[in-house]
Image 1 (cartoon, one colour):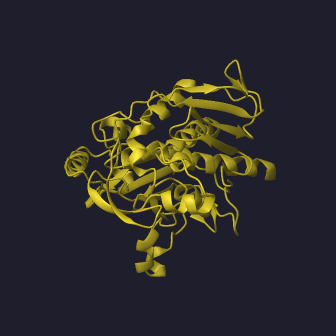
Image 2 (image 1 turned 90 degrees about the vertical axis):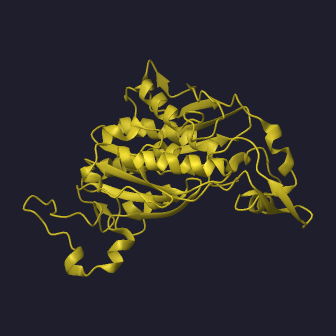
Length: 353
């Protein structure tokens, strides 16, 4: 199986399955001499882990990371950083009913047709459980970036949208509620929506907005390796992501050039930032911001038709512990993937300079 590595200079390779003994990763290219804040790494894992509130999956995992290499006395050595996160709360029997059934809108069918075999317990390698490894690597990348700040938050759940622009939000309030929306009133409506959907045995999608501040000028390449292209690839690699837009995004397609152009200030900054902090594929020093769309979780606790391995249409019903809305737990994953992209370009920029 290919495609288990992300990055060029700052590389992450992940391994493991949802119901295996453990998941883990190898980070290659992290410079030596970086003093790690292990509490910050664990905090990001805690933000992603299951069972943290009533509106997410109730699988109970401590998600404690154990570092195996690449760190000595809390400082990176420049050698590959190996780490594992043990799986401790698998309930594989919850998936026995789909051993020979392909669930609608899951990777079951495509996975088995491609590889000829699949681990049906929780989706195996296709499970979002793998993203815990990304969060570990992303937490380290954040510490490498130092001055850059990365804030992601829930900006919509179903038809409930946070209407305020990010400039009017207090990012310190993101963690003040279970849905991770920094506006109290909107958050309460989102939580109520998710709870109602959960009672119906259904799921709901939403969007995550991410803001990268203090990004230096010059990250990204002007042709195939544009900064926004790599951010898009990173976000679209996350489970359940259906769309990515940065800056003015699709709204920009409705505007004229005179409306959309970001006019310069004398210091090189711009009066507006519809470009989303990126011009010609290269960061310009303004805030980089983008939005990521997540589909409803495919496992629903309702009866629906599915296809079995013999070609029969059969009736099935989802079982086990699943998120009614994946968006709140996706926040640290979005931040992590953004950090991995920036760390990669940061190191590449150091080569040029």
